[in-house]
Length: 432
Image 1 (cartoon, rainbow, N blue to C red):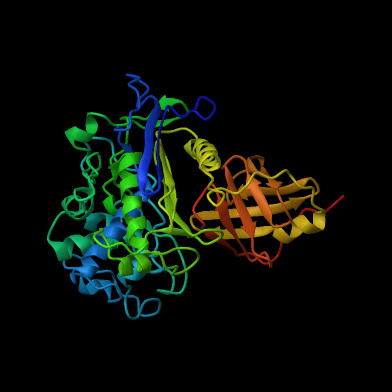
Image 2: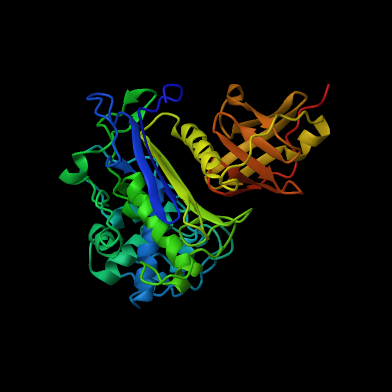
């Protein structure tokens, strides 16, 4: 934790369909140094989308909203502008939940100081926090992660239910599952504030201690590792065919069926080995990750309040997976391979997608990655684990290239997002 500047971490492990243990380490804030407990609430960030998807699918099962109908039919207070070329038939809830609607706004990289005036959902959709949410790619044709799409879903769900999103979540998910330390209320309620983590960066408290995220459906959940474990256990039970859970077994199968590029409805799906599902989350000052098996009741949730939380999380998940005998959860550690310049050159080029835009350059001493627009000094040498597998030590992620090097997919340290080659001519320095 000191090495990665992470003040506090909360972990919940579940086994055989029950929470085996939930613990906290470190401090929930750098001022009072109050300890993290199993009841300490953290911002879940994009993990919020999993809860949102379950809420949406419950309303589908209740007949209040259509999964494959034009979302504008459910929107009362705002309409997604029609794009005759990219979405002549509009976009659907299934496309919004699976990030295949072709909408922009990958995510929301900032919130608001506590006490600040917050924009409404419609104002956010019209550009209060960035560009307005609009079609940028053909609907249903590809995976393009879109927090903006989840804002469209949020408004549709509140319109058809006649309830605020926070109250709808409480009625449909949080209350019934006993997620007593969870809420979408922004700013957080007094009950949450009584034991909540403050965000941090570079070992220092964030200004205002945390940012209020009015983008509730994609990023606004406060919760604990144990509460998220309860949700995952409920989904696992439904996926195994048991009735009486938040979703019917049939709807859970729909949720866990890939739509495009390893993604179902609100869930990242891992198909290698024993099937698994999960999600990660990054808000200013907070990083979190959860993953579990589809066919058995095992899994883990990890939440942190700052620093390089992703790398610490990866190490914790790897250790727990080794302890419980979960070989599919993490990619085994591998020693670095020495590759020829010709082998490295196959991976060189510009790749974009899933919020990334990166140049890969082959040099005689290795493959180097640099975010487009960053200075040359920001290049990172990637660790070659095989001719098609490379690891970024700074990000704590491992990627696997397609056989033709047209794309790469995250296979460890991040959800299985695919990033596509956009520049055919390789960016390769000449070998000596």
